[in-house]
Length: 165
Image 1 (cartoon, rainbow, N blue to C red):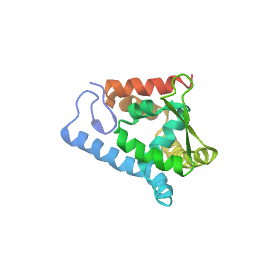
Image 2: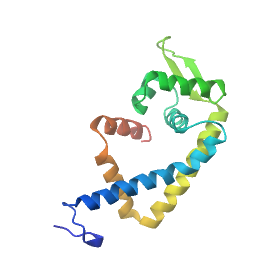
Image 3: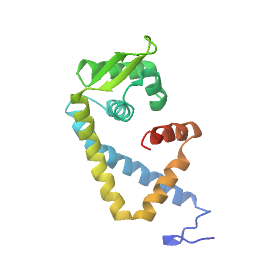
């Protein structure tokens, strides 16, 4: 079996090694969300608002139903978040061009500015971590994240990624 730094083998990990990974992910996620959380707290927003802004930015014109599928939240929960973002002038809901029942979501200039501020904070943290870890670790990290996704989430992830190509 191939050896890794620290003597861990690639194909067998003990419960303790897995527990360490779970805890590392927990604390890394806290760090990853800390900077945006501080910004959002000044506006009485939470992570759900951030996720909505992020994916509306990534998929301009997305429908409410598509956003529901990406975020995996209830319609009631998303409507509460969207109502706030629309009332505060960060998101615009436009009638669909092909289906008048659909609502297409777009960030306003203020929404784009806030989304950029939130994402910049996370990009800076991620860029520093990637530089410290090196290219092989980054590739391995991405591979692990993809492998942890349920098949449906992986499909959604790839669909969003395809828009970049």
